[in-house]
Image (cartoon, rainbow, N blue to C red; front, top):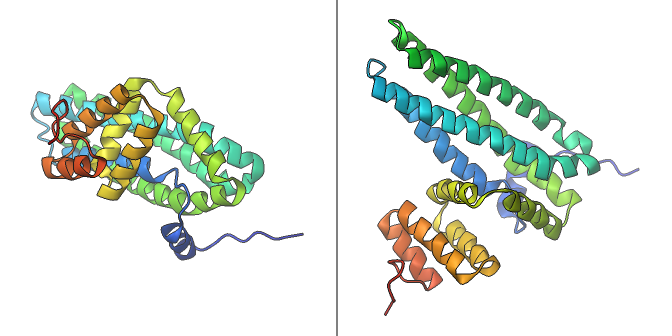
Length: 246
């Protein structure tokens, strides 16, 4: 019987880093890291005496928590479930992490509810929230890095690129246009120029021209002007959506 060995973290990082296959966790995790860093920074700089800032932070934290919870469900349904059928042990630790993350999300929501009350000890609660968010983000950063290495290798071992692409397509098809646009905004904010160009080319190949024009408009809105101009030039589209390039 052939015994399967699990590569070390360093080996997995090297194999994925030099691989040329589909990496299903890469883009969305880059976007989630941007969202988490934005939220953590808001918590760090909060003036808890100001109701408007407390409300802004509460909305930002809830957005992050909702997005993280949805992301866990997406992974469980479209990637971990099929992998579990072929290599159950590969996902066990990650499923345990997901359950812990969901518990942490509920605790953070309780903390936010207390902060919104604006009681006399709100600064203490705000600092406690900041520390809890720091731990939550740190745990998620490590978890996502492990998924992008160990679980990516497991998917490569047990599925073809065509099958993995099928998982991705089913996930995208399950999202509303608004949800797809939301995730693309964060992915664009966290991706490098080459990754963005690849994402845009894949979108162009899979959608009508008017839909792709909407993607370009979204990217031009999200990206700093120099980054969008370079991307538009590489894609051969007008830097200003709706204008005709010359």
